[in-house]
Image 1: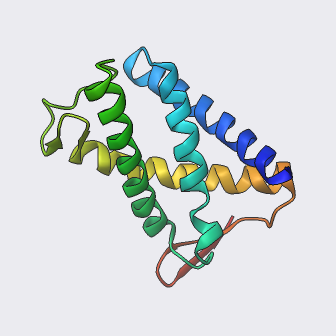
Image 2: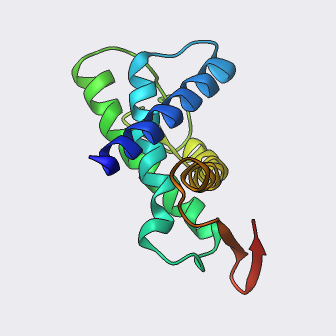
Image 3: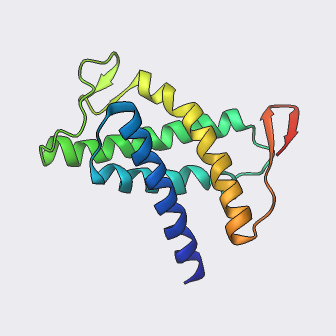
Length: 145
């Protein structure tokens, strides 16, 4: 029960942050983006729960971008293609798949995923008493946070 509450809190915070980013970037959003953002935040933030802290943040960002892109594709197919909600359309973007994902946004998710990892780690530390975060930015170079 305690773990479920922790993930619910993290998903809510992450979803609110993502929703706010969408409002700032696009001027509008859809409530499903808060849900998707929360799920992405928990999964991306949990990368270093499954991999060692010695994994470079840059690699965590790349893995996070893949996670976000995969979830965005699934959500896009359900919400935009099947249900016809038209929440987003990347069909005019280069290297897109069904207008639901595209290479430019996949690359944009890398730095966003790095930020999500760091924010998640510090939230876990301050709110739930987990280990103080420490990072490796690039292979071979350590940075304590």
